[in-house]
Amino acid sequence: MITNTTRKFWVFLISILAIFWKKKSRRKWIVIPIGLIVAGFFIPQPMLIPVKGASTNDWDKQSFWAYPWGTSITHKGIDIFKKKGTPVISASYGIVVYVSEGGKGGLAAMVLGPKWRFHYYAHLDEVKTGALRFMKPGSIIGTVGDSGNAKGKPPHLHYSITSPFPYPHLFDGKAVHGWKKMFYLNPDTWLR
Ligand SMILES: [Zn+2]
View 1 (cartoon, rainbow, N blue to C red):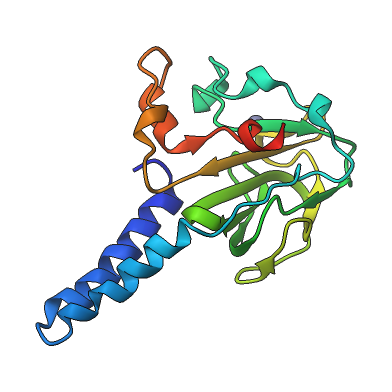
View 2 (spheres, rainbow, N blue to C red):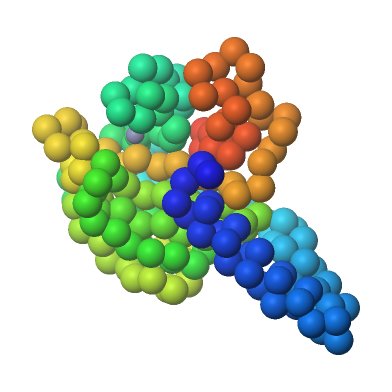
């Protein structure tokens, strides 16, 4: 699977579907979870640049899928550079799935947004939200920092969007990890 979050999403979804499918009397109600999944794709996705005061000049358009990119091989998001302590805000609507510390992302937050897309905010200095909190575009998530593998580099927000449902038209046969582009969406698409 693409990320731990996508794997967990699929395990959760398949478990729910299995609960309905197992018992014949319940089987017809499987349209409820399926309907919810379909409905999720119709939720609009208004988008803001997720760093307060940042503009399109604060990230490099070419950095999405830049290669080589250390242990990640390719860079599957964008890096928005701003002073340490600048507020990191939610790009869209969503529910905080988790807040984590450690690993490459350092202090980070994952938000499930419209269309079943997971928005990942990493290298934070501080987190000011928590799991299961509802976010609107502009809700405070934390502050820009240099945690995780950004230590020693200029403070920035690593922002990426993943979808557990592939977008086949985004398959890129020429790029390294090109098939993964079906699952990692380029945030630049909505922020420019
Ligand atoms: Zn990055």
